[in-house]
Image (tube, rainbow over the protein chains, first blue to last red):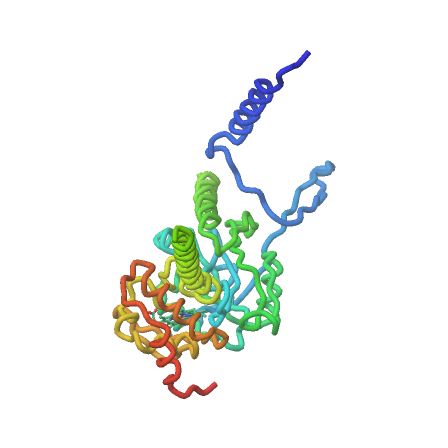
Length: 222
Length: 138
Ligand code: HEC
């Protein structure tokens, strides 16, 4: 006897489709994951052991922006921010990253709870004056989008804390190899998402996630 | 008689297909070269980067400096440059490895895409321009 599997298979496909769909549900209940390592930490309260989860947190930092102002964890306190690593003379992926970051800037430039931090990985060339010229030409406000320079090693260590790969590399175009990642950081300095800064669709996703995070923040304040 | 007519027809058809193939290939070459050497800075849609990298799309510069573009591609550019009323001042690296015919295809591609409808170049025209490039110091 010949059994016809086709209708069954079709039904299965449709069912999985429906199930998958309902599983994701609406966006309303969605929260973003916290990226990085987590460690259980025990503490004793009233003789009972309580286990807290400690998430990877971006460490304290201090860099100089295009206006020679010190920018630190205090600058981003209570705000969400997007960060990336670049250099002004980079011929490969940086122009695309910057044109995508400009979209983020334009969308949130009037939102006081959002900040953008772009670190140079070529601080020897990218001085305050060079970054100032760069930012001014793009016509972006320095209280919203900070172009950061400073001690080379501190910048490279910072990239590691954000899980962004950077290194000096004579083989690479422009002398530095780095990823085009945009990282999204929440008001508690937890990393909540990573995006390909050269791809329009992924930057669309970043802006959706930023909206989610801003809503989450509002809830916490209430 | 009939045979030679047929042969002639076949030859003609062959010549036509190679010609059109040649033509489309050349068009694709301009596009391919743009993607390979220019797109990272001037963007997929030729819009450039605000204030820092001038646009190719609807750039007046393509017409007002038409005769300098071949050398610009080979030698690059630096110093202030005004495009559509905005002053840019950043270095553009030249691409020394491009042959005269490749530069011709690339120029024709940018002059006739991204909303541009400018005059095309002939190969000999571009050759002449390249021979007359100003001396360039590294
Ligand atoms: C590293 C980034 C970069 C790359 C790659 C690049 N350009 Fe440019 N281009 C620039 C900059 C910056 C200027 C402005 C130069 C100045 O300020 O003197 C410019 C200027 C131009 C101009 C004149 C102004 C305009 O936009 O109409 C043309 C035409 C041009 N580039 C075409 C090309 C072509 C064709 C290629 C590929 C072979 C290319 N560029 C590759 C950055 C780049």
